[in-house]
Image (cartoon, rainbow, N blue to C red; front, side, top):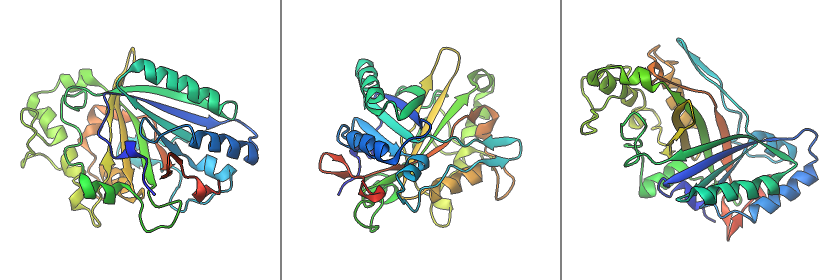
Length: 295
């Protein structure tokens, strides 16, 4: 049993995030047939698949740790919750390939799934956010990444799976660029010039709010975030994989100041507009293993 390999692979040059909702009055047996077809048509590497709570409910499956994304509120900030029934993360270095794979998936999943969001993402420089700061500096690697992101000792059909949290954030780059370099560094908690953590950064600095080793238990996730851009707005697709959602939720609660009232300084120039939880099934041979939901 193995995980979908794209989860632990490095960030690709280009990506596309597809979010789907279920059409009304979907019959469980029809949905099961569509999911089986999907399971045999993706490799888990070029296309990583996540299944949402609504899909699991229709086929009467039971993924104990899968739950709806929580709506969180802090002092003047809000983490919205959306409800993708299915999510596909397409990874490649050719935008044409992403386009044709999108068309193929839409046809395969129609009419039971309707596409609700298509977001094209890309690697910027040496995997930086559009602010110019390095992204994913504290990402676990190797066996630590496997331990953080992949389910183990849960039984056949669950071992090798992962839980994905996906958010689309919109940046106000004009606001960010109007700040001094010192102000920007204190928002992130690192120096832009050398990526070194700042000891004198305020308590609201993002690095201080989300230091994964400072939680009890430690809140490590494997992040695979990438910038995105449209004609009139841009930001970050935040993507985190964990063996449960607990670490991600601990990080988000700290960001909105749920424990001490200190809100993450990131909210001074960026905000999330989506939030989805997905279960990413393991692979069995060359296909997705859907035994955990009875397929």
